[in-house]
Image (cartoon, rainbow, N blue to C red):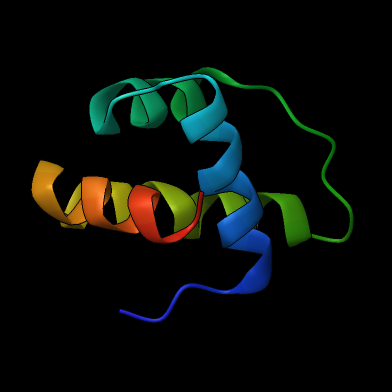
Length: 67
């Protein structure tokens, strides 16, 4: 799976807050964000899709690689 620079920043923030995959997913689904020409909505939708598709082990591996 290819993770973009922007997504790495979000994963780093999840790591700093010690969020589990489910905790990160819950956070993204609950957060309100400013939408700039659809970018915010697309970005959040992509992040939610990634977190929904990967396993906890894959999430932990991504977290270790991006911290």
